[in-house]
Length: 204
Image (cartoon, rainbow, N blue to C red; front, side, top):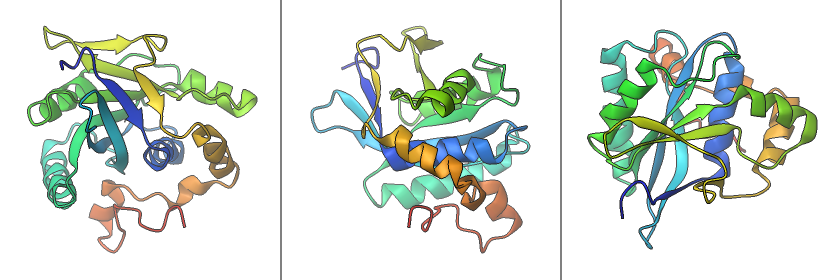
């Protein structure tokens, strides 16, 4: 099955972790990687976890390479892979997928050809705070046959979905309690190695 037919499903904890990371650094571009596997039926990329990466100099390649190697080593032992990339733009009124995000997505595709990019949709995030809507506050991008990143329209046979329908309600609870203060990303870890980029206690 080609990536043009695959569906992408994100688990609640992975989804919330990524949104909280972007809320912690509202004036910075932030990014992360998606962790998961292809479903046993071979038709869905299951995004089961996420690792927040950076909130400062995103294009710096040495740190990116180091982080990807460490993340891949850790999760491959659990039968999981890096299956995509998450990006939140620096400006909340910026809705395009930029060159840096595409380049990192291309890099991940070398190892996982069905990789996706999830771009934070600030309009949906603001609307969620007002209406408690059920759809994901992210846009799905996949590569077409020409290896160009294309936005998958949200009504395209629901190719992108939240695994748990209650994910946004849980997210709103965490937003109201400012849970984003507890998020650790790779930037934080590189500054202080006692900070764990796996965020093991985040949802306790």
